[in-house]
Length: 358
Image 1 (cartoon, rainbow, N blue to C red):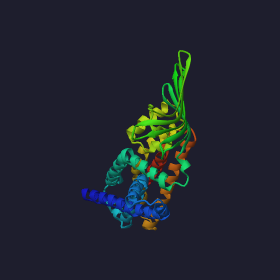
Image 2: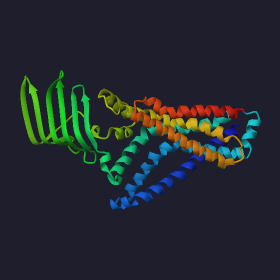
Image 3: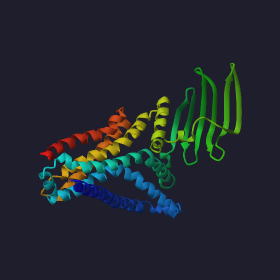
Image 4: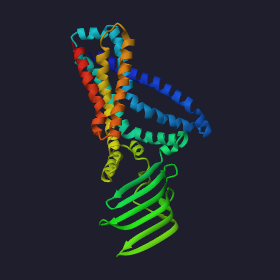
């Protein structure tokens, strides 16, 4: 049986790699054909385009890992089944559960790679991929410009900006309020605020400061004023986008900050954290489903199994998007929304596995 285990593991991983190398280049070619005019318009170098497509592979490949695994297992297991190899294996006294062992082992390897990628590699790729999209490819740059942000940055400090431009690291109609035991102690306003990277300071234009000390009002104003604040310029960016660009530890810290500030996007961030585990875990469920579906010898052969598999893949994607939208647009629990597609498909898998064992 060890020889058979090694054979299935090799087939599993090689077919998965082949599927990945087949579909990702097709996706890249389609994307190039759509964006080549933009590349020329901005006179982008070959290295810039190459870096963009390196990020592209991670950006889309990570989310397609489960689907690639699913189709790969259906493909090569259907070939085994059409040659009556699966029937021969199970007829020799090997149980269906034992037959699943090399599949589970292979899926576990991909699961671990996917988890690590989702926690630490993909967020950084998301950051550079989305920055490139915004800077060179976005038709409507207002999509990333945050509007009307009011945020608590500490127990007694609040900031407000009417809009923020991430490309220029500049926000407009800025205000900063400092409270002392529920009384306003200081308020700073400015027409705009810009982060100066080389000096690590904030530069305020049309600076106006009103302070209250011992019931006395002190007013200060300047045309240009450089200072520091205890918040990062990234705190003013689109928070939904920002969460996707943080590694696991940064995301946990970010979520706690958003929880303390009462952010209306907290559910979105919790969904993002849960999906970093639920997406890789779907690899295991879809592997079991694919084996159960394709181990039957059907009249339609590989083609019928693949068609059925593609249909199930679309259903899975639909459930994933459907529950994600429910979390974002309603008060649905983020954990439930992230794991619901896996739970639904786990129930389907268990039912089909019962049939496959008979």
